Each structure stands twice: as C-alpha cells, then as structure tokens.
Amino acid sequence: MSDFTHTRVAGAIGPYTDSIIDDLKVTQVATDNRRSSARLKGNGLLIKWGLDAPEGSSLRRQYLPKWVKWAQRQVGKKQERIQTRKDENWSRTVIDGFSVYDVDGKEEVTAILGKIKRDVQPLLKAFDLRFQTIKESVAEGTLGFNRGRHTIALNVRGKANPMKLRKYSAIMRTMIHELAHLRHMNHSRQFQDFDEELLTWARENGIYRPH
Image (cartoon, rainbow, N blue to C red; front, side, top):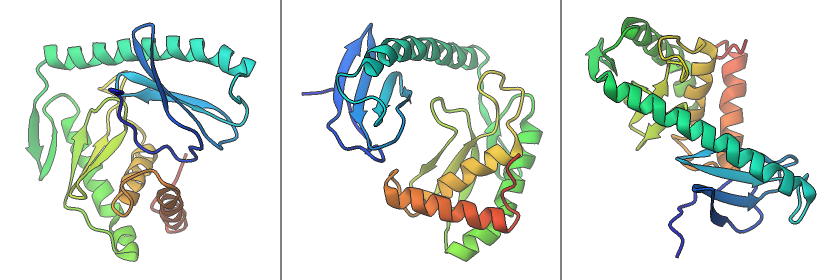
C-alpha cells in the first residue's frame, strides 16, 4: 500500500506513480496538458507529464533527474525558512481583528489584509460567496489556503525575504483563487472555470489589476 495521498490533478489521464528517488518522494502522473511541469508537493515532488513527454520518451529521462535535484534544493530552503521562524520564535497577534505574525511589518500586513477584504466585497456580492475571516499565513508550498470555507489565509510576505511584502496584485490573485474554492474545494475543471470567471469579473470591475 502506498504512503502517498493524492489530490486530483486537473487534466490527469493516467494513474499516479509513486516512488522514492534519492530520498525524495516523487509522484508522477500523465496529463492532457500541452507541456510538462513540476512543483513541490509537501516535502516531495509532483511531476505532471504533458503531451510533450509521452511515456518512455527521452524528454522524460532528461527532465526527471533535473526536477529531482531542483526539488531537493527547494525542500532544503523550505526547511531552513521553517527553522529560522522557530529560532526567532514567531508568534501571532491580533490587530484590527486580523491574525498576523508579531514581527516587523505586521502593521503593513494588517493594512493589506484589510484592503483585500474591502476590495472583494463587490465580488462576493455578485457571486453570492461568503467567508468569515482572513488571516496572515507563512505556509510553505502554497500562497494561501481556504480552511473549511470559514477562514482564508494569505501569504503576504515573500518567502525568500519575509520582511519584503508581495505585490498587492499578486496577493489579490491568490485571494480570488481562494474565493473560487468557496464553491469548489478541489482543482477540478469546474474550479478552473469558476476561478477564471471570478478573475474576469474582477478585472472588468477594477478589483484585480495585474502588473
């Protein structure tokens, strides 16, 4: 029995293959995406093989070791960041009703969360979406998450330099992604379509201004 757990990957057309390569957990799956891609999955690697790299192809043999080495480096950096926060004893505080980390920049983080919450109100009303609270997150491997359709957590700080805040437009893009999860908790085609619908509406109504 596999120790791996899988969240349905959009476009998956083949079975999930789990293995340990150089002490790294690696999950591979064939998809109908045009191009192959890879990302961290927890402390492991998820490879989504696209139509450019069919099974047995030289492209797979070329990409696999490169992506494994990349993931090992990223996992190492992630563990260093987690240890740094532990060493610095990061703890939470509440400012203006928002749960943020009690470190330098907390006032700026609070202001951004407040603006995000105000700016998405027309979007919530237009699509009949509801949540209760927003809080700051420094979770690794994600830029935000939705907990039980109740709390939305957003990474406001940069990962490499937590004293440098992400662009407002990037944080808003994450927020819209999490709002789509209020209706579809997975990353199905329905989720992707709804996420795009929210994004289009937000652009047209001046809520999301990518730059």
